[in-house]
Image (cartoon, rainbow, N blue to C red; front, side):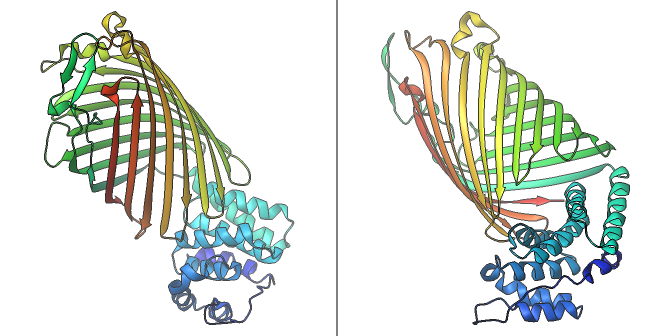
Length: 450
């Protein structure tokens, strides 16, 4: 950190004045004292002064800048990024906004967000800064280029676990009696009806990234998940997913092409296998806009062992198209995704009713309450239309409408540890009452990155 601080000393001395005002009441941020401590090089003292009142004072452009600068100098660059981003985006004073951009570019560099650092330094260069400032920015850009070309392969591991309660773990109807056209009213056994339970859901994920150069890399991912219901094992799920991808692009457009395999076991027995080819594109636009699109082709096959010989009638080939739009504005991140899929049965003789198409729309909003706390909300709606009449419910082609909502909270307890919690509700309405269900679930857990 010290060598990058020395590199920016001429920038810090270019005479950009920070307009701070004296405290008007006990609730005002201590900007004058923060400025004094930072001018004296007492960054830790300035950070300790600002930290307790962060929730009350963030949003004040002078406080955000001073607190972010102190955090950067004591080795808390991630926290500095949050504060400096606010000032660089919202400051009404042109000189303060320019100063914040320089420090934010340095924070991006320290956190190894090289593309963002490079972009921001170039923005400042276009404003025709003084010669000494330009020289130091160019030195930083040379360091960025060197680091980009010398990127090394890296492993990362993430352990996640949550515990919660689910009032319908098998997404089944609550009705015990169902009317059928062929045999009249039938009584469902307990396995085919709504079942509630408490659960633990744990996963271990590995990501390996091998850079080919500054614009291309190979990405390998493996994810192992275990869902354990406490009172019944019948709906316990184990899944193993692996993906190998090729990534390429620049600071504006990013592309990913990959192949993935997925195996799912139900109650310890083979249940479903899938192989998929996928491609995606993401564009980083101006003013916080991001666009994305993806296509995936999957072959989904069901296990035919353990007395489930007819399961192969459920085998399908799926094509999934997705388009997304994201907007980051201040503390809010909003995303809208539209998707459509078609599934063709592998065995149309006897399995044609398993062919279907579905279209959905999902919206989410995250609010960065502070550097540590982020509440969020997600809602979605999906329409499902099957291709052929159901073999039991003759003369009826199944059609479903599904809606869901989730509210949750992220607490970044430390750089590596995140505490999570959410509550969700799902309702499925079908023209065949056997497939009507509702589901309420809540859970709390953690995510730890090694």
